[in-house]
Image (cartoon, rainbow, N blue to C red):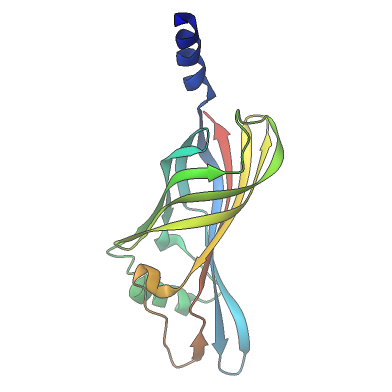
Length: 186
């Protein structure tokens, strides 16, 4: 009976896998209606993403950080407004995500294949932390995994004020976040 305990003590840590971000992009999408242009998605992106995660079974630990000062859209005025008013990046330069669970991955983790996933964890924007669920897919190829995830929520979930400027007729009360990450096993 004691030998089973020794085998389990050896196998359980061996099933844990750690990954770090090799490259990535984070995006926001917000539907807006502009005077004389109509309805369109405002999209801002940044490649200033870093972090790591440790997966063991369905549990996850780690942290991912996005530098919000690096977000850029197709309009500098929009970017400046978001940095100064909505996100207040002088006071809160980053957003962070701490995963808690990952649903949909086989255990042990595969060397190849694509899997639909849900990632549950705590997102912090400005000084507000809320649990969010990201949905998407993870594709494994050798030592790397590409992860495409998205989530959405209303502005008020994180205490953000919807933009209001003269050229905007309206901004939908829904922020969609997307990440496209390449992770490498450590």
